[in-house]
Every structure is written in C-alpha cells, then in structure tokens.
Amino acid sequence: MRKLCLLLGTLSLINSCTPVTEPSSSDFEWQGHRGARGAFPENTIPAFLFALDEGMNTLEMDVVVSSDEKLVVSHEPFFNREICNVNFVDGGLPDTLGVGNNIYQWTYEDVSHVDCGSLPNSKFPDQKKIPAVKPLLEDVIDTAEVYAKANKLPAPNYNIEIKSRPEWDNLYHPEIEEYASLLVELLKNKDVLSRTVIQSFDKRPLQFLHKEYPKIKLALLVEDDISAKDHISDLGFEPEIYSCYFPLVNQDLVNYCHEKGMRIIPWTVNTKEEISQLRAMGVDGVITDYPQLKREVTTSEND
Image (cartoon, rainbow, N blue to C red; front, side, top):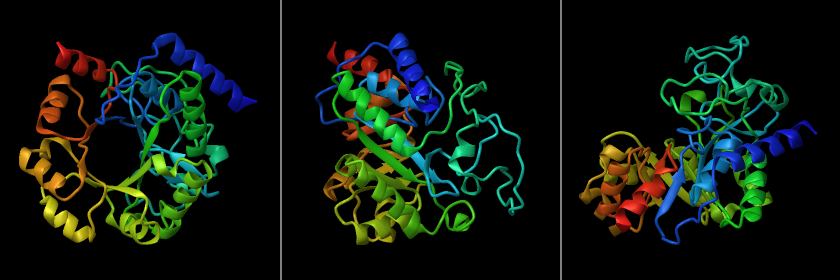
C-alpha cells in the first residue's frame, strides 16, 4: 500500500508540472542522465517520468546491490551526504573512501526509508526538492513501462551503469560475475533486455558480459584523454557505444568510432550550444541532466 501511494503521488506530481510531448522520430538518442538531475532528485522515479515526458528515448541510471541482493538505483554504492538525509556510521567496515553508510550492507527495506530528495542541491538550484527514495530497478522499469503506455509514449530504452571498481570488490559490491548476472537476470525477467545497454567505466563487467552474453549491447564509459584506440585495445572488443566525457569529443574521435562500427554518445551535456555543436559533429546521441533542452535544440535547428 505504501508503494502504491508513493507511485500515485509521483504520477500526479509529474502530470501536474510537465506536459506530455511527442518524442522525436529521429535515430538520435536523447538520454536523461540519472533521469533528469537538473529538474528532480537524481535516480528517482519522478526524475525518470519527467525525462519520458520531455521526449527522452532512453533513461540513463546506475545500479548498486543491497545486502539482500536487490538492485538499487543509486549513483554511489553508499549514501551520499550531499543528497541523502541519513546519519552516517561506518557499520564496522573499513571506510577506505571516507564515505559512511554502505548500501551493500543494508537491506533494501532499510534503504527505502532514507530520504534522498529533500536536501537542497547547490549544483542544481532548480531541482525540485521532494521526499524521494532510492528505488529498486524493477520498480523503475515497471513504472516507466506503465507510464509510457498510459501516455502513448514509445516504450523506453534503458542505459544502466554497473558501479564497480576493483577496490570495491566484496566491500561495496559482490564479485563482478555475480553483480553483472543479477542485472542480466532482472532485465530478462522484465523483458527489456533488447532495449537495454549496460555501461561501465570498469572494463571487467563489460568483458564478462561480452563473453557470456554476446548479444547484450554494451557501452564503454571514458573520462580520461587516453586514446579511444588504446581503450578499445585494452577492452578487447568494440562495444556498441563509446561514451566519453563530452569535452573529449572531436571530429577525429567521431570518425574513428563510426569507422569501427561504434556509436558515440557523450556525457553529460548540459547546454543547448554544446548539444548543437556535438550534433553537428555527428555524434549519435547525448546524455544530459536537462531533458527539457531537447525542445530548445530541435526548435532552434528547425528555425
């Protein structure tokens, strides 16, 4: 009953503040970063529904694992002090990152009582402050599928990041094989695997998935200036998508990716001018905190 009330409240909030818009029929991929971090608390159901209303083709999000092996939508495998209202303890674990509560040591029932939407976010002053929790991935998918169908929107695509690092193994998440397999099984059960890309900065889960599930679409996340050629060589195969920090994009990189049969979708692009410049270079999509920029960009380009 509590979950149903939260869902009904969310649908009412989104419908009251954002009109339904028609998504573009273009092949260009618009991804709402953590849903719509510029407008609603990140990685929450209100943010994802807002992104759908603004015509995003794809919902971009991150998943971590709770102690009871639930996939939780969260950018960090811990409660970020800047956005979550929780008392911080180390739980008796080595706090090597200086970060406090470790979601991998919490049951999802406990996670679901922590408010990660009401604190002000200085990086996103226009973000609505509402009580919001870190949702289960299965609940995000269920809600997005129902919402899209009810509002005659295209079935959404999903871009889901595995948040792993070698130093986090068995501390902030399970072994890579278990982590990745939990995600694949859930996506299969929800029948959205064909509409999902799995991404990571950590090459290990991508290598595992490429070997064990070769049909799954994968994206390599990149934030450094090491060449794409070297990154792909280290990965050992060419993924579906090369997804780098947007200032790293130039025409040579776009050409290289296309020559190798990869799409290039940079992150996180938050101004109309930057999006237009990247589109002119031929990128295949953008990941943005501000889904509402789609209307500004497409209107400007059509004038």
